[in-house]
Length: 171
Image 1 (cartoon, helix red, strand yellow):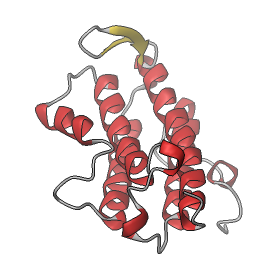
Image 2: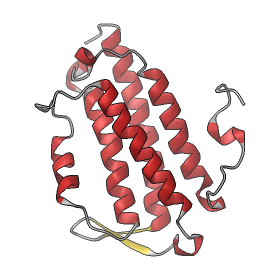
Image 3: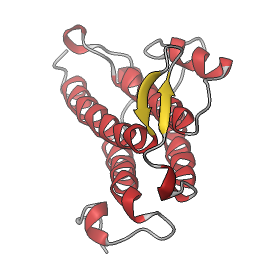
Image 4: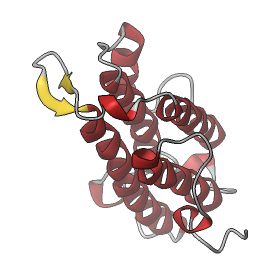
């Protein structure tokens, strides 16, 4: 199949439970589009905030971070100190001087982790309660996984607009 068809139009993904196929399709679609759209995007434009809105760098950090955090909650686990530190760093041009390649790699690795978790998610657990955050806000396994997919696509759209604006000097 060519890249012209969207991931969901290419058929079932092996080893992915049937009810979680849409989640996996959305995550893989996001990965394809993000990597294509940011091909040769210059690092010096990464942290520009057009009209005071979120930078492309923020969206890239946030995409990876939210996937990590939401999938952690879906496993009924709490966040680690490392996850909290990454949350704190979202949107900040850290002293590490993150590059587009660094952030794309982080996102791609997070997609791989998410797909592995989806493959091992028992459909019988999809309606199990899961608490979110310290407050234990109510959700379910399927609610969290679906949110991860839709949230990823939402931020992908925002990132694509931001990239188009800063590439065309519309800051």
